[in-house]
Structures are given as C-alpha cells and as structure tokens.
Length: 297
Image 1 (cartoon, rainbow, N blue to C red):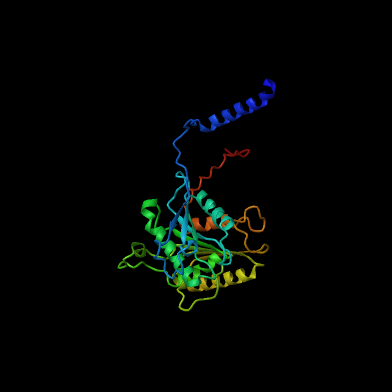
Image 2 (cartoon, helix red, strand yellow):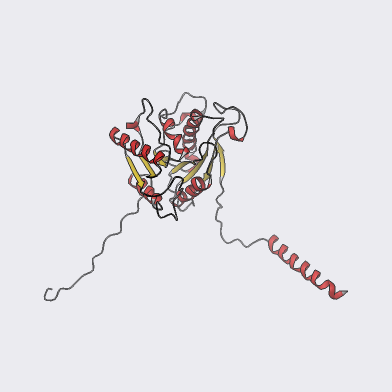
C-alpha cells in the first residue's frame, strides 16, 4: 500500500515545487518600464458624429504602440489597416507595421475606423481627421512632436485618406470640444497598395504633405491609381515618391520575407529620413589608408 502511494506523493511534491516556484517573487533585475498597449477613444461615448448606434463598432479608437524609451524620437504615425471596409487586418497591416515603426523610434497608433455597410466614406473620413487631432492633442503628454504626425493607409485604409485630405486643415479655436482645436492635416502620407482613388473636385493637391506610394504593378486596381496620383501630385508641385514592383500581389503587408517587395519598408524609412521625419545618423568620416609608392617619398 505504501509503495502504491509513492507515485502520487512524488507528483504532489513536484506540483508543490512548481507552485512555489511560480508564486515566489522573482528577483528584481532592473527597473525597466514594461511597454503596454492601450486604446484611446476618438470621441467620448454618445458624442460620435454620424453614429448609428453605441456598440463597439460605432466607437472608433486608436491603439497605442510605444517604442522603447531609448529609441523615442518624437515622431508619430497613424496606421489604417485594410480589409475591404468590412474588417481590419490588424496583424500584417496593423501590429506588424506599428512594431517596425517602433524600431525606428516612432510612436504608432493603429486606427480602428467605422466600417461598411453601416458606415460610409463620410464617417471614415471623420475618423481619420479626428485621429490626427487626437494624436496632436496628446503630443505634450506623450512627448511627441506635433509637426511630425504621419498617416499610413493599407488598401481600404488608404481609401479613407484622400477624402479626408480634401477637408483637413487647421483646427477650430472656437470649438467647445478641445480636441477640435488641433489641425487635422497629417504631416506626411503613405499609400501602401492603398485606394488612391479618383481625383476629388477642388482637391488641394498642391498643399499635400510629402506622400509615399507603393504597390505591385500587377495589382492594377491600385498601382495605376497610385501612378496617376504621383503624376498629379508632381504636376501640382507637391513632394511625392512612387515605387511599383514588377512582381507581386495585393496585400503584402510589411513585405518582409517576400523577395518581390521585402525592401519597401526600408525605402519608406529612407523617404522619411530625406523628408525630415526620421533622424539621420551623421556619416562616418572616410579614412584613407596611407600608401607608399616605390621611388616616391
């Protein structure tokens, strides 16, 4: 009888050891502040314009991804994932992109905007503008530069940018809502196989901020509008950069691991450095080795 109980006793001893190990306080190695993602509603409950309800899908919000303290440079970006306006690709067009921006020292905000069929472009445009205003309203508290707020849209997420840019501009100092005091115009745009769409009447293309466009050439529904928008921006005198990859498809996300377009995010990083939104490292001085030529002192 005693022998038959040994396996049970051994199991109980092992379990108690594991529990003790889990419950015992771990030694403190350093006072590193953990990075925690959190949401910021764009409007307080019950005040969302054009709202058709008060559920989770009626209240747009931003999810914050902060870089390590040692990397922060004050820049920020709003990320609008795609998903045909009926869902949001939070992974490959949201979190993955936010984490890459964090590596560049940029604070990222992934936008959950209102979707079809309940909501149309007008509501999504308001969400985009409000997102920019919300980030600027928190710039001081979050140690962000209010003049370095970018907006990047993927697929359908790019589709909300051009309509909201048609009316984006300085805030209203007389508004009772303090968030509305801030400008809703981003400091740069990036259309990633984003629905650049057709020209909008009275569109202020000459006042567009620096704009980055990228798509796969075979994805003609997006590459051709991107190419046309690049030409229109260039003719209007705006700053724009276009990359069309010969091979590939729609929805390639960050592109890492895909040889067709794996370098598009490094190209975006270079664009942001050249336009002043990311810091550039000072070039190292070139040192020339001394050589001795026979017969010459």
